[in-house]
Length: 137
Image (tube, rainbow, N blue to C red; front, side, top):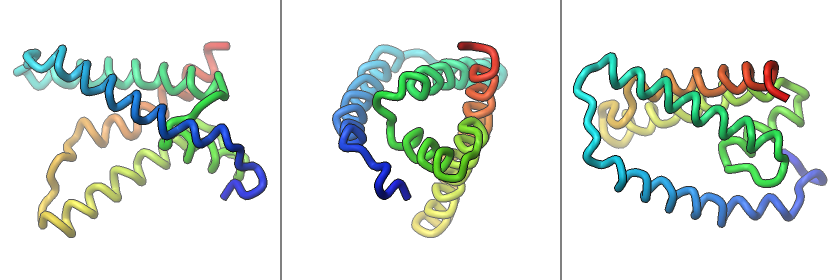
């Protein structure tokens, strides 16, 4: 998609993803005993997490240094087709969730690992990034 616009710095995604994976594993170990039993509490945590992720994505995109693969794809589509990043991010995230649902049906014959929080996050993160883009910087 990027053709001549591809830069070697984009290969930095590989170590960045590795480091992100390590960080996620570390945080999962820290919060492994945290259990929120109420559905409202779980949704509140989901919303808080979406805000935190959206702020991180906003900073990542504004820095224009290294993009993680999901944001890199959204940025490539956004730049190629001259579309707003936030809208493109929503489309990419929803598409990835749709592929996950389809893969789950094909290989497991049922939807597993994807619930309302996943779908909610797919739409909410890009929407919050749009708000940050309009109100910050």
